[in-house]
Amino acid sequence: MIPSTANLPSARAWERLAGLVPRRLRVLLAVLLTAGLVALGIGQLPQRTRVAFAAEVGARLASSPVLAIGDSIAYQAAPRTLCGEEVLNAAVPGDRISDLLERAPALAAHLKPARVVVAVGVNDSALPHPSIADWKASYRALLGALAGAELVLVEINPVDASRSPYVERLDAGFIAEQNAAIRELAAETGAVVVPAPRAAATNDGLHPTRAGAVLWRARLSAAACR
Image (cartoon, one colour):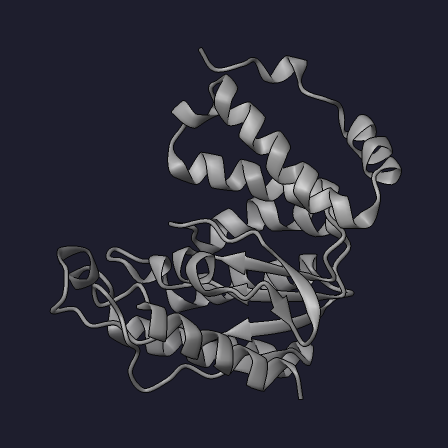
């Protein structure tokens, strides 16, 4: 049986608890708390729900200077540290821009990061997808909700539609438009852009291999840590 959320601590209780826990122990406490809840029944929930829940717990209890948000690629590839600072990886597999608009402002409000890495968009390219104007407007709204932090916007990796049925649904032309929109929004906001590579090493045409994840992190560091 999944435990009732009515028995979970209030937002004020979370804040008091976070203030009492030494900074170095907060991430460990978040992991242990999540593991305990999994044992009580959270593990029965879908992966996306579990990962999103863990991200929220981490944002409430950790004190990482960098917040990474995005989809499965960021979930796999985001580094533990960036420019010498600890990263809270709050990316959730399957996330779209609408999911980030729903969750990311609260994560940032709890964590108060100095820098936010945004790596999202490939799931939004699945057919049928929104218009580029609507997608860009949503992305702009997300950046507005994260105002005050240094923003690092990661362009979307190219995909190989020949590798899996899901990737066949992704619109490579729309991805090119998304990346152009990301560059335009970066110019508007003063954000750092992490350019997409010409080709990406993947397991299935979308998700990076171990080497691909290393290259993803290297591009991120090269752009963000100048």
